[in-house]
Length: 117
Image (cartoon, rainbow, N blue to C red):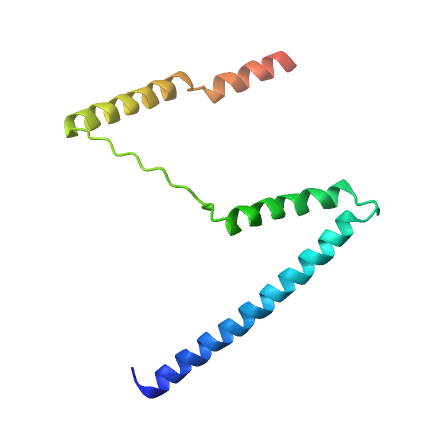
């Protein structure tokens, strides 16, 4: 890296660290005020408590190291002929369902006109 690029990179990292410190302080102050408010005898509407609870639970999970997303990977071993047979069976089921749902619109329209008349 050139000296200028290194300097710019360092400035960005310094700025990010400064913003992160501010965000941490804001979060601390907000959490303290929210805790004080929740512990007071003031009535808090349920519509306000629901998102407070949900966000608190989400943040607790993240801060305690629980994964925000779990991906389960399951590998199966199939032969090409098994996959082709499964695909052909699925296509046959789809075609069979499509055949059962064909409606002749002209006949249906004539029946409706006959009922009205």
